[in-house]
Image 1 (cartoon, rainbow, N blue to C red):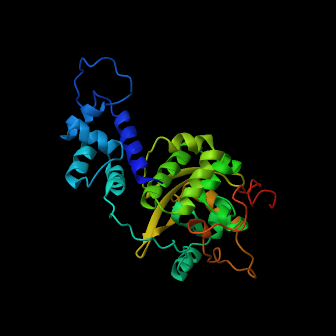
Image 2 (cartoon, rainbow, N blue to C red; image 1 turned 135 degrees about the horizontal axis):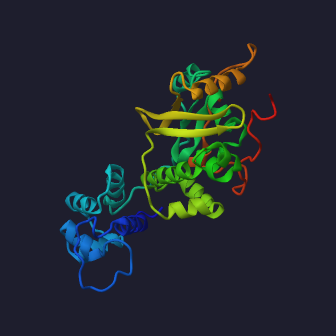
Image 3 (cartoon, rainbow, N blue to C red; image 1 turned 45 degrees about the vertical axis):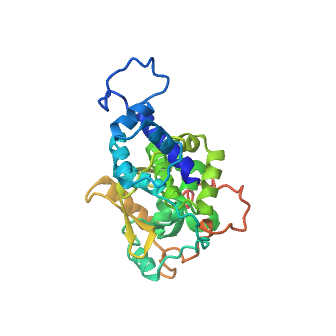
Length: 322
């Protein structure tokens, strides 16, 4: 992703969503508005910079823009904390002679994190997400809840691909549009942080071609940090469940996050989740460990499978087995 282009589009879309009356801008005699939101000169006035300077910034032609100016623009655009951090990430100056970047190494899940997943077996669905939404590891209850990631090729073990390319996701999530749009905003934030990641670039290109919803939401340039929330699931075996989730990052592995689901004690969702845990419990002679460690290639190299391959559209792993 070209940072200058993304900076230009991000500023333009943030300016377009800000209504003059909300920003305290008085109507002028400059004629009818042909574009939504504030004009460039109005935003520049609110930020305390010249129209020419802001225009160059919005066109991606910034030269060593100061933090004070970025702060002023962020306040004028009424950016939240995540959007402000994203603006600074895009606009920070680059050295004249950029050093040759080393290829990103495949992401690996530490043995201790795998043991944590194992400890949650039968209690909470839990999985580890890497760059771009790659599912690096998942316990059995998470695979039973969402989909059997272990049965997919490495390249297809990705939450974004599952959400947009597998029809089962639209039936599984109770508010698919909401969750899918949030996922796009989270991926946009990661793409800004890892602009040189070929795996994320490939993923965005594939979803842009194959999913009209993704293409529309990606063009909105929204960004979102996914830390916690609530999701409604319509599970094909145990029915509807309302689950809360927490994303936990680990020191030294900032690009990885463990997502752990919980339910309200005594609720119907707790009973449904317990039923799912009982249904998927491994026999005594089978291993109950979470998915085995592997190096996820999608963030640094292409898998052997063709790039046009789509995620499995088979039924949920529990359907038809019980």
